[in-house]
Length: 100
Image (cartoon, rainbow, N blue to C red; front, side):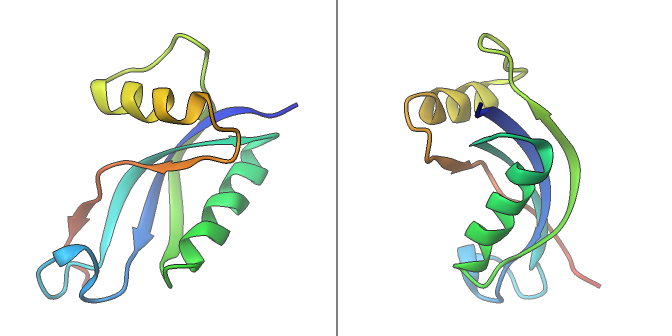
C-alpha cells in the first residue's frame, strides 16, 4: 500500500536552471511523494529529476509521513499538496551551495 514519504534530497541541477548564480548547481530540497517503500520513493524521485536532466546525489533523510505530522510550514504545504494526488512528486525550496 502506498503512503506519503518525505525525502530531504541532495540534488544537482543543470547550470542556468532556477536562476542560480554560476557554480551553484548543487543543493538540498524537501520532497513529498507517494510510494510503497523508502527505495521506491527514492527511485521515483530520481526518475522524475532525470526528466529535467537533474541528478539525485544523495538522501539525507527519508521516512513515511504520519497523517497529521509536519515539522514546519513548508512540509505542511508539501504534504497538503500531495495528500489528494497519489501521483504527486512535490518539490520544496531548493537551497543551493557552491559546487567545488
